Image (tube, rainbow, N blue to C red; front, side):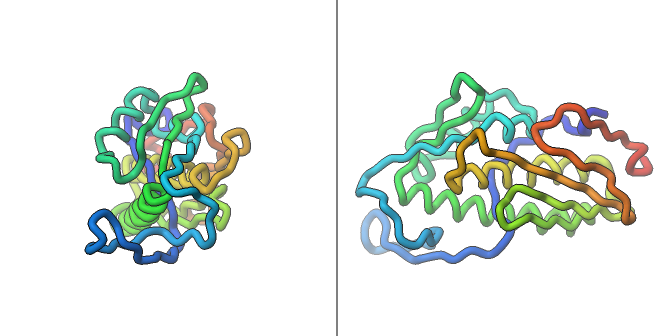
Length: 205
């Protein structure tokens, strides 16, 4: 079963705990936690473009147009000003500094939730390298094919996207994913990779 994936879509990322900073928003009375970036050179009202390459979306297997539509549906202006599909099937996100910080925090919380659920529901321990270029999945004896596919797609797209939002050039994007079960390598791939195949038999199903 090719990648054992029907269609899962996700954009999030970050396993380790990050710092936050409380800043005033909108009416000056409410406050919210945004991602701490340290010193920045953003100008007031400046909008920057972040490009997430096609390699990220190939993991999820959704057409780019559907990806863009889903991002716009979840956005009410708090995360980005607009999202566009590019000719090379990458996706551009246009953000102010406040939107960028807010979205990074959302991604961090989402990836933490995904990692937690992978271990609690599917008995998969997920470890992510500091540069977000490698994911190690330690698969339990009772992990099923569906649970593995679900966790693989979500954590792959989340970490791959987060890597892009850290400011790396799209052409430098890479993601190495390794899955281990009973001390043996079940999967060792560099995304995007359309060549690997797993079946239910690999999970004793």
